[in-house]
Length: 357
Image (cartoon, rainbow, N blue to C red; front, side, top):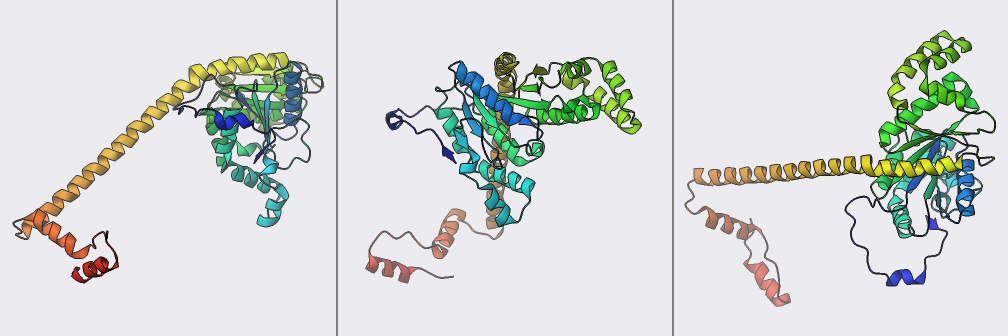
């Protein structure tokens, strides 16, 4: 993993920072950009990067897609500098998808260094953007996705942006698939979540917003598709996801024209506040519960050790030993070598005096 920017020489003379026991809520946020393949994640990151540079508030950009041939935006940290995608395919005999997942897993073994770089440069950027591969399963069930999101969220404010292809989502079944993935990621990460309907220049995503707010409109769209089995399934899922839609932040953008990016920054700012008021208290509660469990486990081990000592003492008394402590000390001396502090001659004399069992 290599950072493109060269650290300043004065960094070595800076005083050591104080130990951070919890998330630094005052640090600039990180935005994790997720979505299905072809939804426009990389183009979205490119447009958002250009938007921020134009306003003299440059972002810190991280590329986590090892298979991309060209990154169309200035990148600070690139996974391709750490893991070679084609070499992973060749060495492990994997296909493209398996190699991408393996590259992410390998990257996660060094992700603490990425967090250090983000924290170190936090005063120099307005927001940290993380572009991810289209293998959405990395963040729905893989351990690497949990490591990335948990590492970021336990360090500083973190927001998840889920990119949806509006043109493809006109099909109710495809729309429902996207919403299921979004729901899965939301409940897995428990982080502030924004659904971004991309490609608004091709199809205005107002239909999707209406489907989320009004079940009857979605039901009408299902009837038009004339697929009875999928209609019933999608209808049932829509009712299940009704609670998921409540309070869900949505933004409509066009990465091609730049439409809607003011709303994106507003949604990020609101999500950072939600992180402070909702995620941080939950994090502190989990941390306190873990501390109590650790203390209970320590106490349990101490009690077991005391019970073992009591059994040992009873066994000694059962054998009729009058002086248990002296007997135990003599037994240890007869079987355990003493720590040597002298020269060779003294060591030889000590060895000659040791009684062997």
